[in-house]
Amino acid sequence: MNVIHIKKGTIINEGRRFAGDLLIANEKIAAIGNIDKSIVPDNARIIDANGMYVIPGIIDDQVHFREPGLTHKGSIFTESRAAAAGGVTTFMEMPNTNPPTTTKANLLAKLAIANETSLINYAFYLGATNDNINDLLDTDRSLYCGIKVFMGSSTGNMLVDNEATLREIFRNVKAPVACHCEEEEIVKRNFESARLKYGNKIPVYLHPEIRSREACLTSSSKAVALAREYGTRLHILHLSTADEIKLFDNNKPLDQKLITGEVCVHHLWFDEAAYDIKGNFIKWNPAIKTAFDRKALREAVNSDLIDIIATDHAPHTIEEKSRSYNEAPSGGPLVQHSLVAMLELHHQGIISLEKIVEKMCHNPALLFRIEERGFIREGYKADICIVNPDDPWKVWYDNILYRCGWSPFTGQTFKSKVMTTVVNGNIVYDNGIINNDYRGQQVRFRF
Image 1 (tube, helix red, strand yellow):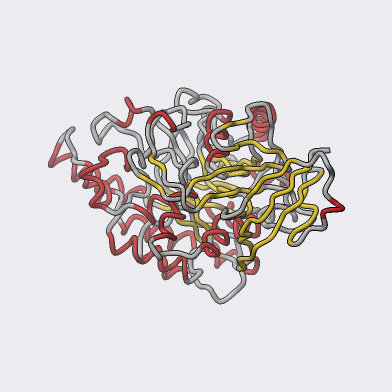
Image 2 (spheres, rainbow, N blue to C red):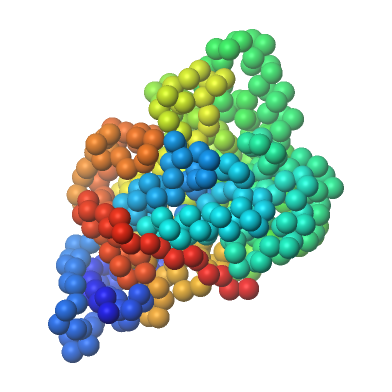
């Protein structure tokens, strides 16, 4: 039996911060606090966490690991390695791969890949199209975390822009419906206006005007109206504007909310001034917008109007991102650096440690009803991250683990460093060393 004794750490969990030990045995948390030495086996692995933060492993509810079909950008193996190095112990992966995860057969194929190659725990979304409502309703609910609806431009045929189809989805689907909200017609109109003026040389700083706040708010408002009409469990992904925050409330506990929201690390970190420095390497959909929007999003996290912090990890090659604005794809890699970036905001006095753990660990587990994960509780799966809060390091090409080989944080010095990541009671990352042989588990849900 694999036994780990984490000693003298500062445990951050469920709104509390306290000194204590953890005993991990048989994949689970066996004891918390002042642990009697008599219950610790002689062969236990001892981890001295004195001066360290001990938190639940991060659950990232929105990633694109690019497999199958786009593995020149990343794979479940490569990106789960990077995630483990960042303290992420569970990911939920999006359906816009090749082929897209819009059928039960394609979902099962992706689960098989993860079972064979993922170093951390995994779940997958089933993707909606204009014509696959039967696939959505017939697929065993235990096989996926939610239904992904692109109410904005997407790859392949995954844009759902048929009103009747949207109503069928919102009326009939019982799983969480996770929406990418940008109004396609508004985006097209704005792009065409920029193209007429600039041709093939649209400057990247126009990205937040093309994928505008109007496009976001129009689409998000439509999704919220449908959810209220049909009682749908709606989760709006990667919020980017101050305007959309008014669609949410914090008057109920998370597990009683009908409509919830997520913000991504890049929308909390960057604002539009960064386009002059980073260019296409911070081109995401929805776009990074103004400093005013960033401030409002940060405040909404702290006031619980926004429920989850995620990454929308979406790697592309350096060559792809180096193309002109018109041709460069949107998205960027983040899972290795999401936690340390949020801890940097903590060091700046913007967000508390307890709030980071709530939004990145507890709330994803609660919102998606994940069994026995997301908390440091006796009997729960031992998904743990140990962080040194004061060990500065610089993100550089030689320590970036994404297959694409770059990060929007390249050159950034972070004060905190992930030291150890434990997945199901097994050490997967430890001070720069990755256990490439361990395999995570499929996430289970409560219904």
